[in-house]
Amino acid sequence: MSIADNLKKYKSEVESDGVKLIAVSKTQTVETILEAYNAGQRIFGENHVQEMVDKQAELPADIEWHLIGHLQSNKVKYIAPFVKLIHGVDSLKLLQEINKQALKNKRVIDCLLQVYIADEDTKFGLDFDEVIELLRSDEYAELKNIRIVGLMGIATNTKNEKQITVEFQELKVLFDGIKVSFFRKEDSFKEISTGMSADYKIAIEEGSTMVRIGSAIFGKRIIKHFKADSAN
Image 1 (cartoon, rainbow, N blue to C red):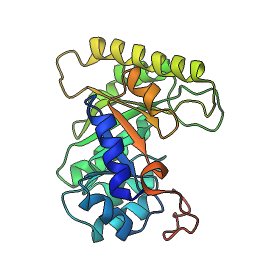
Image 2: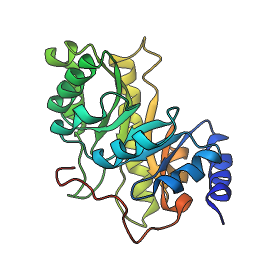
Image 3: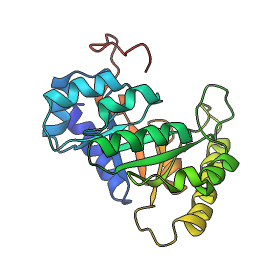
Image 4: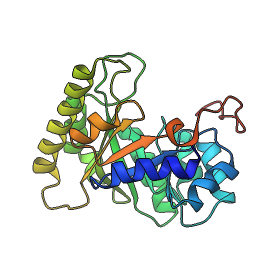
């Protein structure tokens, strides 16, 4: 199947539930992304800053770029002029740097707090208590150029669907509690970014509003056309 066919399949499946489809375009060429763009896709997710910066310069201006990978503070300045949403905010320090760079660019940058929900040591994220501690802090209250619009989580890489379901359910419970406690009057706090190619159906059932699908749309790539910068 072509990229256009794959996109049609996932869009009809995902968007019928009111969920946004983020096409994960890491390691894909500009030409391949353009194929998806010409098939109607406008939201693309990248894991590495340098790769996203290079592609953004070459591709249509109306693309929404989402940074979905781990972001280091010293890289924020490169994406601050254009990034639509940063998914993986896992510390107050990073949030402060995003705020600083957003102010320089006269922007308010939307962010998701990444929550650690997996039973794995390799994932990044805040634990539940740390999320609440951050939102209660005076330092967070001072940040005027960022906007927290939801939470992001990555489930354990397992075939155990029950475990994945529980992890997504726990994130939804946290989201609901935070919404009531901190964002009751803010309609913008509405996003839950969970679910990838292997588990997006479970994610949607458990409240996801954004799913990140890459290889199932583009096919697997063996040769990388972009080298990820060493720090990110």
